[in-house]
Amino acid sequence: MARNIKFALVLAIIIYTFIFISTTLFTKRLDFELIRMWGFGLSLLFILGSFPLHKTLLNASKSSGTAIHTFTPANEMHRQQVIREYDAKTGKKGENSQQIFVFAALIMILITIVLAVLF
Image (tube, rainbow, N blue to C red; front, side):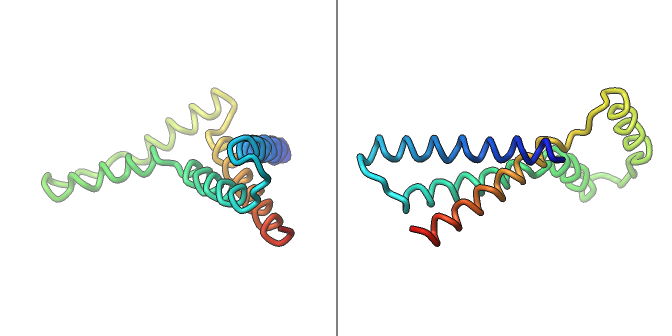
């Protein structure tokens, strides 16, 4: 968890540095309003990127066919068992990137708030 927070902090600093440099190059002045706007927009994209869309699409596709076809319940226990075996075999969980995106988004929102208060 601490490793994910450190990686998210470095990612947020790199993104804000890129926004700072590109804003300075394009506008030829230091425009903190534009920096705050782009930072907040990218943090919202990171929050959207942290959602497990594959689970949403999988569950949505299961429920859409029930109105047309007869309902046959999926074997959820078997699916969960396969997922647990895969996680145990690979030795990693699939939520690391989601945690990094959430932490980076929160750090970027905090930086945006600090910039709004200071400038």
